[in-house]
Amino acid sequence: MTVLIDSSIWIDYFRNGKNSDSLNFLLSENQVAINNLILAEIVPFLKIKRQIKLIRLLESVENISTDINWNHITEMQVKCLKKGINKIGIPDLIIAQNAIYKNVSLYSLDKHFKLISKHTKLKIWDWHRLAC
Image 1 (cartoon, rainbow, N blue to C red):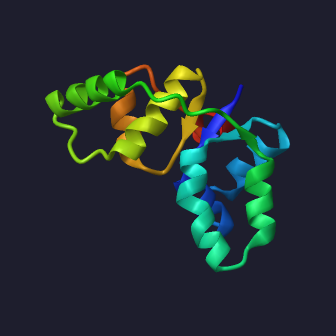
Image 2 (image 1 turned 135 degrees about the vertical axis):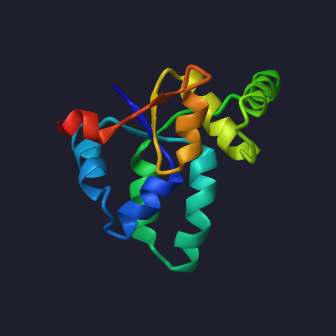
C-alpha cells in the first residue's frame, strides 16, 4: 500500500510533531510517496533554511506523476460546492485527484481532504485505525 504524504504531514514531521511516529512507520515500510506539487510546496522553504539533507530525503521518496484532468478537477469542485464545502484551493484538488487516479491513500492534517473524501473516491490514510 502506497500513501501519498501531504505537505502538512512533512512539515509536522520536520518539526518532530505528533505525527512523526506514523510517518516513521510508513517510511520504514517503504510505503511513502510524494508528487511534484507537494515538493513545490515544501522545498523552497527548505532551500532558504539550507536543509539539504531534508531535501535529499524528499527527493529519495517515490515520486508519483501528476497527471491533471481539468474536467475532473472542475467536477470535484462542483460536488464540493454543492455539499457546502467551500474554499478548497486548486492545488489541494490536484493532490486529491492525483491520489484518486494513482489509487493511493492520502495522509494529511488538512481537514478539508476528509470532507472531499466523503463525496469522491479519495481514500484517507488513518494512523489511528492502524494503531488500534
